Image (cartoon, rainbow, N blue to C red):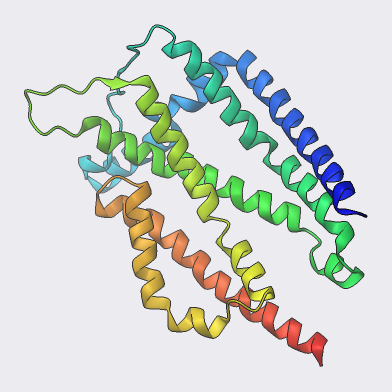
Length: 262
């Protein structure tokens, strides 16, 4: 193909991806009650599964502090079109998240013709792995980080004279930022695979830099969680496990490349 034909081919994949996002966004927009009451706003409510689990654990361990979100955070809207624009934005975000497997598949369809048979065989399952890691990160953040963040930030007070009145947009921004950040962070093994494939990263380097990686993981955990040790540890542990898995992925990638070269 010529350069312009490649661009035309790419445009087709992008258009189909955008249509998928649009369709899912429309479906999310129509399902307003489910989208907001059962998904977006649920982590702040006592009935949410994570909140109930922590409260049950607090009773078993006789540690009342573990019970989170016993009193739901009250949200307010201070803009005339605030709730309508929030409805649209959240619907688009939901459409993107739901469409991620299809978008990754379209990207794969664009890239795969340029691969040889061996590369194509080695990359089987890439769509499932990339989509699975992203959605796992999203679910991890939604069911663990978000409830902990809402509990800490929603109840924190610098003084009893100051009452928290959380804006709807602020709440939505916090939830979406945390979930998307976790989804991207969970793609670490994929990034390591491609960097190792390109010869930029080696398992020896990753092993030598474990201490630095540990510090960076703690820093990342601190950025996407409320500033308390418990939340940071709960986020840091899975990220460190992913780092160790990535070392093994890098090692296998290098070994396979050396075997093929021999």
